[in-house]
Image (tube, rainbow, N blue to C red):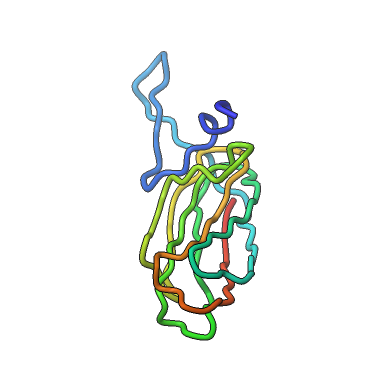
Length: 136
């Protein structure tokens, strides 16, 4: 569990390392062809939903709330994180996202990640949602 969290770190900025024998920065290699996934479900008042996926290598990561029905203007929380074997360990969080909003990060390696959507106290009735995730 700790190895996965250490090996795969979702961050707002791409991290670079310095080699042991010289001062040339080493950055992750080119991203593999991006994979697009669409997750959907129903969110009820005071709840959360989580969807897992596997990164195939380093690269850019985007999660977008593509639809929210019946009201596209209702705010929900949207998070990206690592799957720790039991839950989604949130790394990047946007606590007030509406339809069309996205969360962006960088994946540093292969690993199991997650996207989470949750009620921030504005739901009075169930909503249906679609989240599009583009990852390496």
